[in-house]
Image (cartoon, rainbow, N blue to C red; front, side, top):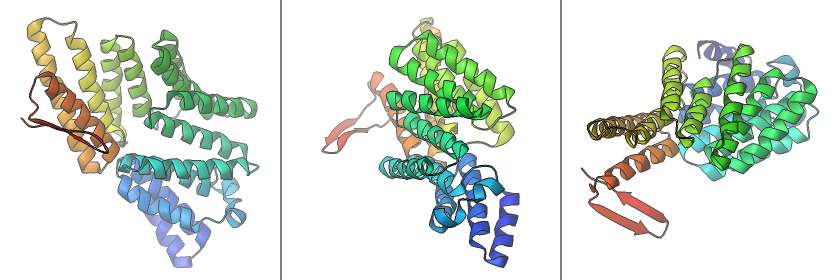
Length: 312
């Protein structure tokens, strides 16, 4: 963030659009990872507005190896989904894919396919995750892009686990994580570990999932990468409830209490970050828990869908 602020000051001083674009991009993705989708959207919106494909396509060769305008659409899509706008998020990913497919820049294409897999995973579209992960792996393998080649199996493994509840999915996620770490990369590991945790839960292995989440929560304290923090706590609560089913009655009541605390913390984090999509997930997990205790005061059905009104 400090370096991004310096870049923005320099770019504003000379009023160079290319430099302004790069500075806003650097700050925007930093705000996204720090867990502030509102400010991320602000800066990435500037990136997109400043971007001229004909004029700025050479920036991929100068800075970071990726087209910042196309990547800007990808990150903007993630931030918009967090902020509670899934349709707009989808539109920006589609724009990024269209631009990437018309650019003779394989790494930008590989990364854009990856951006799509993440959005599809956030939207819980397992088949689309699997399809786009395979496409990303194909490009990355042909071009020997080690980072994207490692990311593909993580995403594909999650899709297999969700679709088939198969150990194969869990194995692919773990292998992908091992390969990913071997590249030296650390960013987004908490997100990937949450996918490992979910796959473990689907296979009835709550202990393995909870261990993955502990590692993820330790990482966010070390790095400050908090955009998926609310989901980590929500999943911890779900896995505690899964563990409850196998526990002694006294232990089960403690697990429910711990799960409730996890859901409440997830709700607080999501509200603080204005991450509406994750707030909804946490609220629904908490509502289901209260429903199981018959602690619901009112259930209303609206034309837009099911609205659960819960009270203690």
